[in-house]
Length: 106
Length: 123
Image: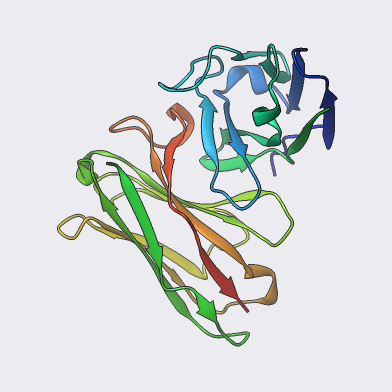
């Protein structure tokens, strides 16, 4: 079965840039979405179709996808960005979520 | 306001059954595919199943195939997940989520842009 691998954790200082990777076989040939989930809350879509932001998502969130890796970048990270982040793609009519990355802002 | 409200979760014995419901409001339910996603306690998100806008196309994770059935009643704006032969590993919070773009499902997806608050299933 298809797997998407993310680093378990990423630490970033306020105002700096956080990059979260999502790795999967030929992931660049598929569309990737990213979700933010804060403790006790439902996930929120922050990036779709690799690099597009839904309305209401701050410009500091951006995404790329090429080769075997998709990347979510948070520029000028704020303390409110501290959360778990999950990538998602489809493979052979099966949805797949990444393993998740905890972003700590300190 | 676009809203999804899940119900039907609870405590069930292994081998038992439950039916989850997800009531949708604030958007044209008949235009969008819908999804079920679950999250075991302290774990990550796991895609469970998706159904097309018409209900005619369904997809399942291997972990639930043959045991769970997704369906929708477009006249009632409601999504369902019938769960049979439940196992301890099915214990999770179950979320329903709306496909962002009308008419899309599967690899051509635009992401899940609206999520419910979740309903808890304990096996």
